[in-house]
Image (cartoon, rainbow, N blue to C red; front, side):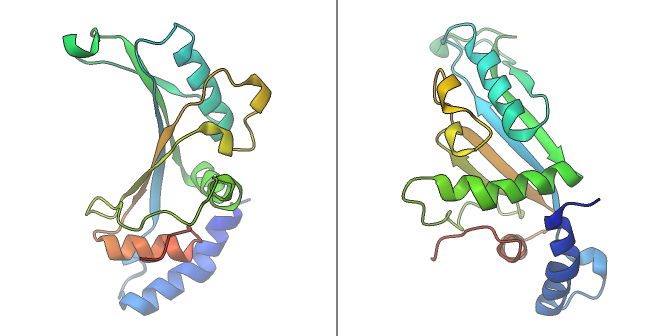
Length: 180
């Protein structure tokens, strides 16, 4: 069974975008390709910080997190090559739509004084990246078991070549953008 948001995309969003932008072919209509959730962890923290971040990220996304390691030595940051510096999860297809649905419906409204996300955070190629300051906005995380608050970056990758097409796609999917 497909995700609820995917069914909404097929039945409501595709016809609306096709009519608004006058796409001749159904394959021109923008769609979400993947969502990447990334947690950067300071290398100078205690040894369990990476494991805690990976465990939290696995609880949030439902997928095992991949630990990112540094590629170079950087003396100013006291960083050595191969040292763990963060973790990430890439979500595609049904897992992506389920995560997007939970993000929009439950997690983002739990941010204090939330008035929507800025529509100016597109990269020029139809991808949207935003940051979340703490992982406690997700209902899957138990507040009693948190050792440290950890922020994360979430990137939504679309097939739209322009920011306007991606903005229309995300708005029709229910993404909460702030008024300009």
